[in-house]
Image: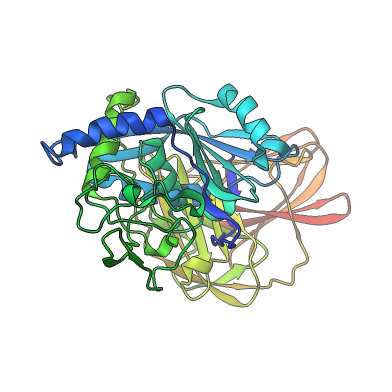
Length: 462
């Protein structure tokens, strides 16, 4: 997995020409579902099993040939939190199987059907739910391909709190649309139209008796009244809350009990539940530096440091003005317990961190702290740790650990503490390793005169 990921907030927008879903359930799937639905009349909901079931999702993130256009992993984490909440009534806990699979394929990123059908099987993990996040589509937001048994999600349709992935996973686990037989704005004969009194609910429509009739196969707003007339001439309103309809995402909140029972049955038959999954719950991180109300931070490079949480695979770092986290200035995932942020000068910022494991992405953020970032007119260029000429390690340093400076050229080094006081000055000889042991903890600025340039690196001593 990549070490650092940047956030771009994507809000799902749908044109009238774009369908939210292009899934067409196969006859074989519908026949299997119908057989199961008949059992519900005899033993309703007895098939619901709320025992926790860990279900792997193999995540495939598709960019173009140059690796541009990847779905953002921080949005992926938000999506996993969402689907785990949506499927919690049957005890499903989705998790990311192994490493994320990054695919560079322009045709696939544009969801060209020929490419999808020719290469999908090459990437699939047979023991997982396979979900591909791709860049664009002119016709849909998401689709489940029964023949491929794989889900494709368009990046821009799976933003914060979107239900596109929930909807497509519903298809994956056997659910049709609530408006089944009304697809593509077709009108079935009266004999195939579901009645609001439920008298034919098991034989027409989606064949679930606890979902209302639904005749709307285009995108619709739940704030708009959509009354329909059933075959008996009775007026009824369509239920916008069910994930498997075409109402806007904000309208959705649930699967019906019969839908849940059907998905639980389908999941059990697939044999992909991981019985040996060990759930890890990383502790909420503690923020170490900057300290609360620190007013002496250089906006050009603010080192943010937090403690390590056992079991954490990643950390989500947010830096925002006025605690406006939804529009955070910085919202990234990192593997380390620190990050050097470049911020605007003369601003007050708040920051917080969340520990993430691939089996539990919905933990709590730390309490936030504030600091003030200002412009330091020292004219220094930040020195990268991977620069070939000078290497400084470790950073941060813990306890009585010395800082090692390895230089491939002779240069002057000056060490300055957080107050601006010079605490050490020496010449670093080419090819030598110089050890520096600070007398106390805190932030130090290592300044180097290198090739006629002033360069620096911040080092935190904890």
